[in-house]
Length: 441
Ligand code: TXA
Ligand code: MG
Image (cartoon, rainbow, N blue to C red):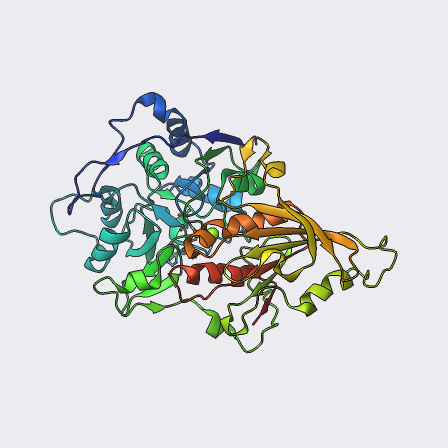
């Protein structure tokens, strides 16, 4: 199967029809958009209606792999392309509340019968504040449901999200179908935040990737269940716990995922291999945020382990040493080079700019330089990415940085973790802990 990447310019693609107020999100309209502007999306929408091969498209969180959520054959195509276990349910993406309501009414009901709103009251303040945006809510499936059974993997509830990306909203509208869409990575890989990442994972397995540039949020949506008491967060994501707690009825929202304390902080070097998720090829060593230590880089034991791992430690001739590539992802604490001896560090985005015609869309600069040992010998390369101190920027670049260091052949990636209490840092650290091969206190 040949995979095509089609660029969609970020023009005004559509708009909510009603002015601000209770009906603001009822109808996403593309009526005012010239047909020529919609050509690429119309083609993708046709594929979604007529074929059983999923289409990759950008959202503000990560790229999704979409299929008509009502057709079993199409939904099965998602599991096949990703290699995803069939017991992991999919999120249903809607373009407006009209589409959501129709999924909450049984059989052929269209959802706007004029009666009671089928959307549970508990979600009203969340929808008002965070939709369209990076929040997924669990809703009861009516009987019979319009959704294909493969979407919910046998569960009584389904997850729904209204993305804020105008491109995604317009695609859903043109397909005239709710889209089941997981992240468009191969199972176990980091989620894709650029079209290139989707191509790297799924080339030859799908026909079409819509390229809308780099995702702005960079981590997946927050998944909440408001149907239980107290309501819970099933997955931390682009909406923070603090933001949820500010909403009426959500003051006591609890975490229903394992955070750091439950994963056993006592064993700082515990192998994290059981969390095989979001994993690049390289070994990932995560430094948890321990501000008390004031660390500005990788500890000496880790630095010394680098040449030793090659059996090249103490090689005075320097010629037996395999040239190691050390990746560093810096955030709030580490200095340039993260404590490694390096030379000639210089920006090198340009060298990796385009592969197969799809731009890498890197929201940071990669610095490359020579890696030295204590004797000043050249023992490899250092690849240094500074995501900066801002948590939203760190989230935006995280998955991309892991993938970029992989693509440049890093043997090991050291990551400067952050305090997971702040803003959406909980989502960042949750993903990093799953990606990490080892962690340091
Ligand atoms: O931001 C996102 O949410 C992205 C974009 C594409 O929208 N999608 C995404 O989908 O991350 P996926 O499939 O990679 O992750 C969906 C998560 C999984 O952890 C899944 O178990 C959970 O949501 N989920 C979906 N439906 C559920 C349900 N009915 N009950 C419980 N958990 C559910
Ligand atoms: Mg995923």
